[in-house]
Length: 398
Image (cartoon, rainbow, N blue to C red; front, side, top):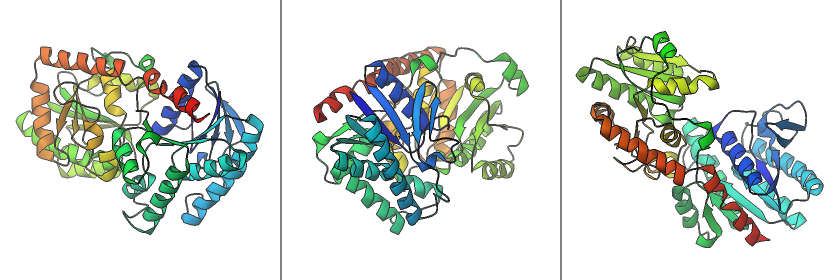
């Protein structure tokens, strides 16, 4: 069986989307599925229209100028992708077209699938109109939002099968009138081989950032508004009043960085909060080792209520303690007090209390929760199990 995956972008670009794709492709190949892959013009400027990355062969679309410039430009992406997909499909002769978010990819796949008589699977990782709201490029329920949502629904109704990454998205899809037996959840997961249990601090990094004898809370990831890092800082300031030995380590970068640093100064936390900036991928585990309690304070928004993130699963795989806001995407992954801690979203006071209580737990309590969290990812949230749902789904369409 050969499956042609139609993608927004892929490795070598770094994103959660690209890494999920890589894992899906590798594990599909491990179970005997032949895969081929095409990215849209949103891959950006490419030196050539075919390239090999990490043992995977990618077809690329010719780049387009100003591809993020409004609705007309988005349709240019669809036209460009449709033309390239038709050529690649005629060359590869796949049994299945598997288009992944966004709806632009779905539209192109539906067009080509209908023309060539190939069934189409459409996979939703998030509703991109909701992501655009958080990025400030779209107003919720504004014209562009409604057009994108209508396009998504158009694809959902015409694809032969639909997959999504979590139950929150599935419920929204069903509410649009899509039959339940047409929708399969292929959950986000972790590649257990990429993670190792961390049981002690990296001494060199600990000395570099002057964290000896400190109780460290913090965050590792990209600085998006939805992550709630401003609320984290406010909650940390309150916790510091109860425990002066606390330090906050924030690793990563993004568009919110300047605002977060300004807030740190405003809260008079400059000597208690460390921004490391982005760090090399090979050093990330060392930074995880420094943090006694990871914080994931996502704000309550439509996208965070519906979509499950990867970060808590990665923390579970490494045996790290964490606390997360009680948005729907977190609650679908985390059982409070069993595999992680949950606190009320959008509340500095709740973060403060979670920090104080989370760090005060006994070693026995912490170890028990770590073991339960690790068992959860080993048994339920690994890529081998998630990808195992695809073969029967594909075969049913043939």
